[in-house]
Length: 469
Image (cartoon, rainbow, N blue to C red):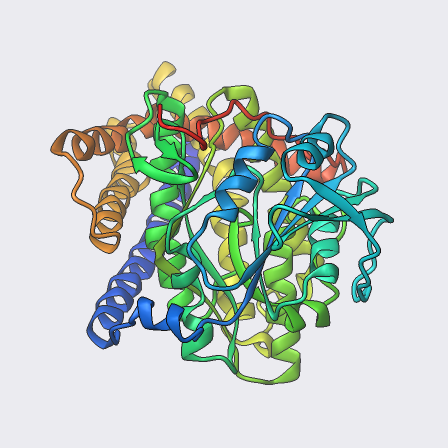
């Protein structure tokens, strides 16, 4: 029995040492990429770009299902963004509440015989409305088909070559679209998708869709998610994008070349991880075409979204994320360790599997072995120290560097108090939030195996977008 406990702890410690070392390597790539970008970046005159219409037109697609609490503020916010030419398409995906009625009333919508090409198969589109007050606003009313289907409907109706997919509770930074379009301008032939940073809107103050004050949330659960997001965006995605191996562009904020998305038949309908699934389809298609391409990430463009502030909502979200991850990987299992797909097959797909699916089970096994070993005095205390060092302390170090990178990239000057709170939160994260995520991921794996497809609808708590608090 002592050997089982020892082996469990040793194997897990070794696994996390290797995993966290890979994360550290990705972090080094991220830092190198950031410094290179700052060194080579040429000045971009936004005023000139606006004056001479140098920026290509963009379609913003906003899927909405039962969003009556926030839909008006969201649309008003998006209609006031700073970009020379864009259209906003709101897709009412068979809402059962007053989402459509509010849109009709507030934005003076009129039904129209809008002609569009159905490039991607979707659920029935009942009606299309155009606003008399805002000529750039189009509202699609369709039969419920899920978020992916709603996005596909928006793609069909859109008239511009690029589309930005966002969530109903997302607020874009003032120059978010301007910065997000840069990679398409710099390298229009190869760039097919670009992701941006998503931060917590909880606790922030907004006025007419613009950020007034980015305060830290008082809710500990949201604060811990902020640390997690900082690691993901300012360490993982920058590094992976630098080697063109990014597999996820957040569904809350991403920009795509429309004709490339149509080639892969859009988002997978009823998918639990439609954002990752689309990016993997794009990688797969371009690798088969044997054409040079890039799917990249812009770390200095920000959007804000509401993060779960209650455990039951967080559980729904994280279980769905894990199921969506597994769905994306196993739908593309032929890419796994397949050199035909280059770095995506050899590294990216296996990395996401071994960093997101395997660790929860190994760590849970180690916790059980440690408790059993301590109770029956079968496990030397030194082994526990090793385990904590390579799992928790290594992870904390990565979190602290990611937090510093966030402020460096965004050129923000936070109060010392805010930095201190984030640093302390990086330590607290390991004492209950980490274990919560282990549980949620394991539940997600078993639900995926049992084929229990649950969307886990996000329940909005609401944050003020329209007026100053």
